[in-house]
Length: 74
Length: 493
Image 1: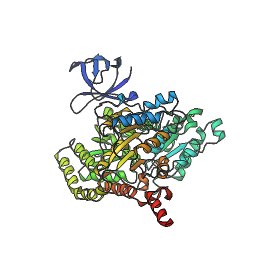
Image 2 (image 1 turned 90 degrees about the vertical axis):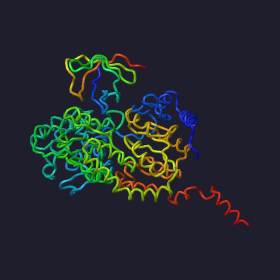
Image 3 (image 1 turned 180 degrees about the vertical axis):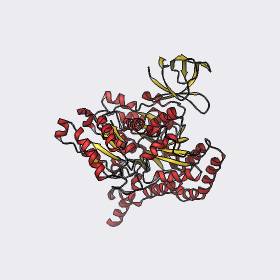
Image 4 (image 1 turned 135 degrees about the vertical axis):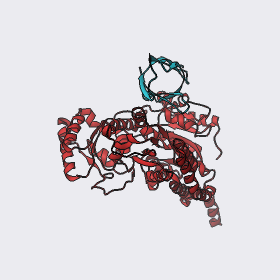
């Protein structure tokens, strides 16, 4: 359950940062990404997958959230 | 000497690794790589931020060095107590050349050494009482200090002193910020964790001090310079450029910085990060908490300066963008003259670097501006994200080495035969004795500044002065040079 710092980059894409692992990666896709629902599975550009508990509204980026690691992508 | 091909570089790494026992060889192999610009991610080719192998000569420092020496030390109007035995503070005192304005011992304390000088009895009975007493003495002797930080040395963590409690009590008594920093040297694998701990201490004990206080008049052009330690005056050379383009620099972290500036930083509009490695933590925190965006910039060499100025200006309105162009145009004749003078003398020379956490990639542009080529680079304490940013800056088939050992560095140099090495004091005399020109790239070899356009002129002069110094011709023993054999033949005739 790593703590993940999420922010939007200049192109509006989600940037994923895990301080403990120096992992800085752009998210390819977010399962639920609409104004009234956000979260679910997030696929990173290196192939790894993380899961965020879906929430009822878009979080106010940048924000630190807990994520569950699903697949290392190796 | 011609550049090595990819295969030759790989063979060189294998050759160097051969002397290690099997376990060590396996570990060290992960830290040495041949650069491949097509890679997006460094973790495919190099491992970093791992514990050094026992028995090898590493050049790394400790967490205390990262906190006291790098992040906290340059804050000039605070007193930083090296809490523990006397050596750590004394032997690192004033070595980093963080310049500042002020009267030392009256209102600034940068080059002084304050220590609790632990003795056996403090280790046995604890040093908290002593620490409290020291802080009262400091208040009496140096009433103009603006705060105290307690920089823990190894024994503090080992004996379990409660410096936080002492700090809180002292804070109430003297009414100034008292910051306990848990940067005991044994924490982490290098000084890098010390930076992180120091950043966290700033976050917890300093940054919130002026939350809710709106008395500070802000402008839309307020920025903070973060991660510039004013070595030889670097931050000043950077600050003039930013101010000339129309920005207002509210805070300098932490070269020539004050605690008041740090407390005001949450009010700025943009954080400018020079040393990403040591200060990105606090920038990320401010982005999340205060919604202050941050960007990395690079003020080494005219190409990178112009690039950075435009990148910074793009985040502001047209007046600043016009200001950036004006600054670049204003200095153009100056830096063109520098390049015209030194490029013919330095063209084609090959450089190997091995520095800390920012310069291994930041200074590449400055060397390239002078027509030089960086053929090897490496970080003492860089992390993966640093190497991600390095791959694109370096040429293909160049060497990249993480936490290089003394042995490996020497062997690489013997084979690659660079014309110049840029590293630290511990490497300097080895390579000078091998007859290779050397510049210290931590302290600018007692020169500087190297940032900004003013700094570039000094940088170019220093590199020329070192590289083209006639002394290097004298290093070889006379009976081994070709000329001397001619002379000997002539003399015997």
